[in-house]
Length: 193
Image (tube, rainbow, N blue to C red; front, side):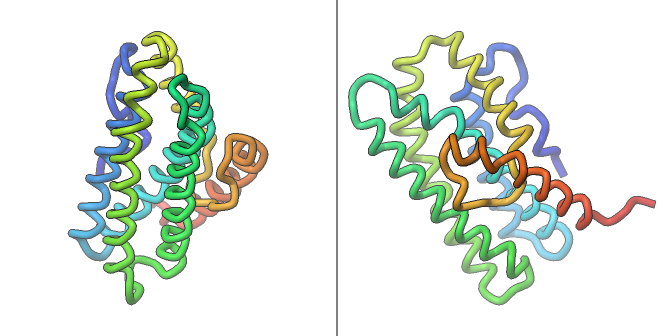
């Protein structure tokens, strides 16, 4: 299974939009793998999906959305508020799926509904938010923001936390939640040996 911590696209010229687009493609691949597999493969793909979504959304909430609110042309607050609402709903659904596990009744329906919601959310970002970033933010700053997103992801929680959904909330609660999540993840992994 590919490493979800590996760079989505290599190179110093990667900007934040390129990074997020590559992550959206990886999310879509993981949904297909979860939906199309069973047993350990499904469980591992779902775990990878959960970690990627949690880190990706945290980084967007800390780095991308606050910037999008400030862009010229108006409507930034409403656009970001809509994306945050979509993210909160997805986190709630994901939390329910995690609690039940991949073998639970209703998981198949839940994962398809989650996929549809997450991919619709991604398309809205790609159609409305990302073009505004490219239009109004200098290329060198977009490249710097890619590094900022990676840094935010490195310390992000590995599970959804619907109540920590703003840059301030993530920065205040995120590190503690990330430690708890990473300890939980370590305890759940089978030992090699």
